[in-house]
Structures are given as structure tokens and as C-alpha cells.
Length: 58
Image 1 (spheres, rainbow, N blue to C red):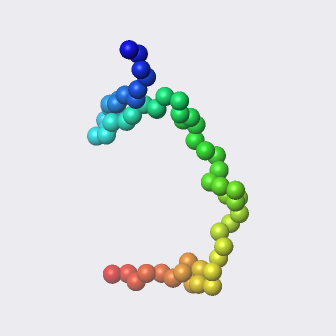
Image 2 (cartoon, rainbow, N blue to C red):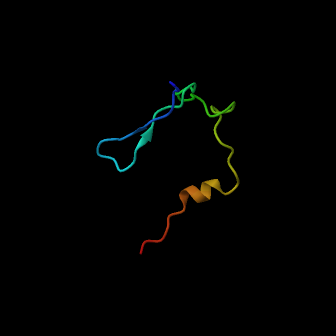
Image 3 (cartoon, helix red, strand yellow):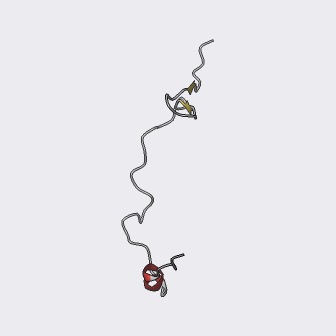
């Protein structure tokens, strides 16, 4: 019986192990975050003030 499965692989120097990709999956990363990935986010009335506010120093 030769069924393909994910395996756990040890990563040298790491505390966590990683899984091999599941059979039949695409491991290439997506290039966009959605249909409007190139548009800048909408700004609200308080955005300039929030960007310029400086927290107090203790």
C-alpha cells in the first residue's frame, strides 16, 4: 500500500517541526491580495492627527 502522505520534518536549529506539502496542493504563493490590491486605503477624518500624535515619554 503506497499512499502519499504529509511527513513531519525536523528543522535544524528550530524548536518547531514543519510538514511537507499535502499531495495535490499548489505551494506557490499568491501574488495579489485581492482585486483592489493596488489602490491605497481610504483615509478618514482623524488619520492625519493619529499619524502625527506622539505618545508621552515616561
